[in-house]
Every structure is written in structure tokens, then in C-alpha cells.
Image (cartoon, rainbow, N blue to C red; front, top):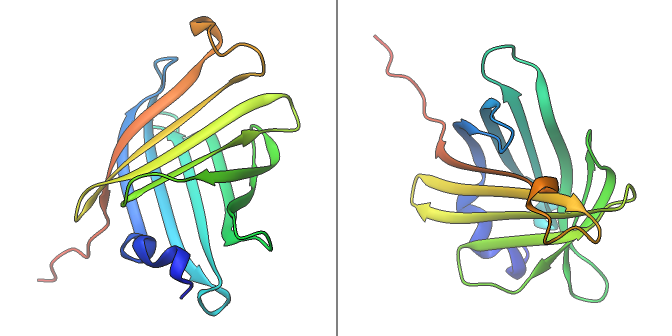
Length: 154
């Protein structure tokens, strides 16, 4: 496992939560983190589904890796943003903060925070480039996630 990922090893697994989008859609969220390429990368995928209709509101799948210049980057495909490259910004331990611009001219930001041993806080946010101060164009979702556990067998 790469040293840059050591703090995220405890996130490997499946995380589930529910909440509401800024537009008022009730959502179920599934985040999955897997080790890939013998520890050279982490696969991070997330799906936001409407709680009542089961429609996929937003899905992202990609790889978190260290680029040749030593920067942690997340190369992903999003059904809202297309192919995106987000760059990690240095933050406190237990925090992964990613941001970047999408090809469809949006600023995208995703932050995962270790809340407790079995809880993560996932914040995702995007807005058109140049509209950072226009609250009506902001799209934000904040969801508390719990680690998926095996049900007791009877």
C-alpha cells in the first residue's frame, strides 16, 4: 500500500447512508472503496439514488492514485460531469478533499471526513464556473455514512 494512502486504508469497504439533496430529493448513498493494483491505487465509487423511485441521481467511479509529480489525483467518470480529474488538497488527517473543473465547465468538490471509526461524512458540491457566489446555482449534498455490516445469522 502506498504511503500516501495509509490513512485511507480504514475506509476500504462499503459505506451506506441517506439524506437529502439541496434540491430536496431524498437519497440513499452507497460509497465503496477498494484497494487496486497491489496498493498503487484505490478505487472509489459512489452512487446517489432517489430513495423513493430508485433512480440514479448521480454515480461516479474512478481511481485515486499518486501521479508522476507526487500529487494525489482522482481520475473518474461521472454521469453528471463526464470524465473528471480531481486533485487532492492537503488537509487534516482523516480527511480527503478533492476538487477540480469538469469538461462541462463546472467546479466539482468532494470531501470525505472520518467522523468516527464506523462513520464517514461525505460532502459533494458543484456549480458552474464563475458562479461560486450564486447560491441558486449551487448543488450540494451532505450525507453521514455508516460502514455496512453483516447481519447476524440465526
